[in-house]
Length: 159
Image 1 (tube, one colour):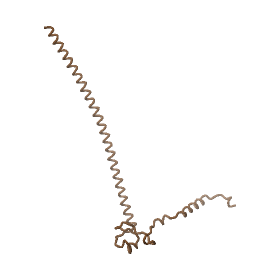
Image 2: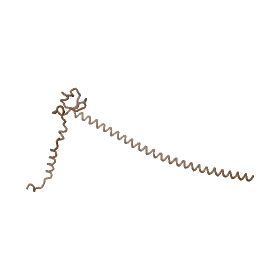
Image 3: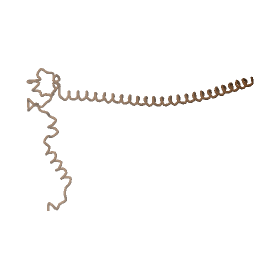
Image 4: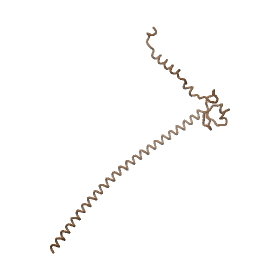
């Protein structure tokens, strides 16, 4: 009769999650507490400021860090975290400024290219205008020379 009953999916899901959690070798809380290599029963809870390494209280009192200046590990963690956050914020701000400058430079380049195109076009129109004026003047001078030549030839023939 037990096999004929409906399945309790909620219960099965809870059991599956429990089995998965219990199968993990290390729990999250166990990972948070690092232990000292020299004093295996002591948790690492202070930070040696001179050596820049985390250590335990016994290392400070009796061990390699007895002459060093130390600070509580959470305080050092928060200080370094805030320094890193400040550094990241400065980098982001610097990146934003650089991106703004790059955008401004790209706009300047587009403006220069557009001004160059307009000046080339303007110069081309000016030279075309000058060429047409010179061509017109050339025609006038050639006609004047032709008239002078014709008049001179007529006078010489008349003589």
